[in-house]
Image 1 (cartoon, one colour):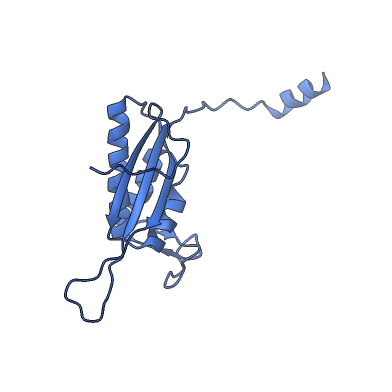
Image 2: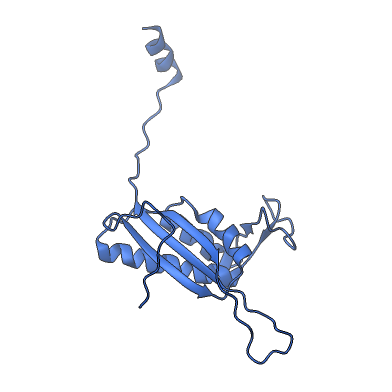
Length: 164
């Protein structure tokens, strides 16, 4: 099998887990908007975002490629790219399985997720020379430590500490 280079330069074999989807039949524009939403999110939250878009509960906000994206509640324009979300969710689950096989902790974070334009092949037998949409997607997961919430000092305590 061919080795693929990862675009993420700081990839460490023992601290990160990766998964790559090659030649996926999804739009590069839709996948770039989805990946923008998933970047630097905890894994469980990223999976929840994708599942809500698949179930058409909450749309993915589209900021750059807004053609046909109508206003949704609480945001400017958004869409429900179901096909792209299902493919990206499968890649996230594959990266999670890779992380668990490496023995990484349960607290995983999406460090790097990037779509890239793949080679376009022609539809077989078409006379008008239409091409398929193809996208490569890379996902790198890493560990993070949940910081416990520190109790906030009361207003009176903060003033007395400042006076001392």
